[in-house]
Length: 379
Image 1 (cartoon, rainbow, N blue to C red):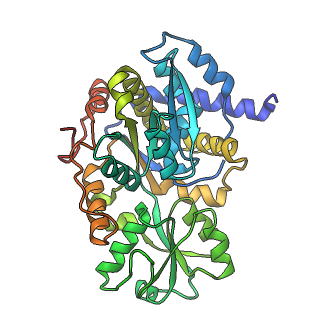
Image 2: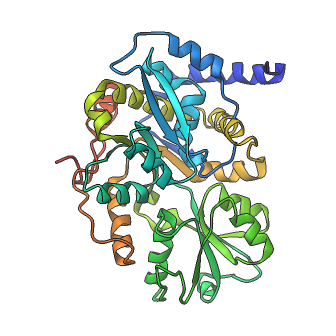
Image 3: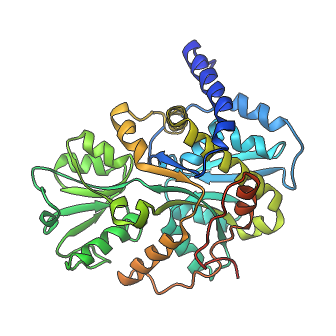
């Protein structure tokens, strides 16, 4: 169905802003900006993407299958694909986008050979790497940091000490937020069984899509969740009691990585490098034009989920996440240590989980500093 005149005007304005800002973005010293996590909706420009794809030679693969979640923590993928920035770097090699609702299904697709590159959280990356004995994936870039909050019923919980005895949701047992919350509880000196979630605090593993309704029904007293679920809860009357960024050095911790199948990386390094050029340029544009990028991400979410995020949700959620090329490898190492401490996993050997060679090549070409793998680079 043809776009409305308003939609065409919006897209024209956004495209013009993109072109104006890319040159300015190249001068930014740090590829990091505020964004959001975990969303619901988009308006893809298939005609524009097809036109971009038709331009230029194919690389060593005719297509590349890229997986991501319809979440704002995956804004690099949402915006990069929506605006054609990744496709432009691939020339005639066509992007085949795939969306997933959870890390395990994306990892299964990567392992099964139906996915080449994916945007995913640190915990699924660690678990998959360890279970495959280091054979299935490599982390090749960062994508997002932050965007996780503890939100509570202000009538029941007024201070952090009031959490004792309450029912607090996390998205999934052993996921990134669950591990962080269990570690925070431990540092308070409280006891919780990581398997059952029972203890001084009841940790209730609840899908992010269900959490707002569960909170409204009174079955939850709060949640340790990513954005925009946190802001959705606030719109229902909850209060932010703690932003997880306050617990981390320099207020940074990884929430989304870019991973690649080791087989695809070995056979098609030129394609992987082109995707990374696209993600680096996408992140630079997001830095330079955050308002335009927010609109682009929300348009992508609308297409994928049929509904855009309301302003009362996306506006407070957007500035709580930083989009960054840096994988913040030292924080992934810390997160794995927390999972071991909670007895959710055995102590992992993560040596080799990162291969930042191509990312650092792209960053160097852009005149930007290289990023570190914290000693966890390929063997």
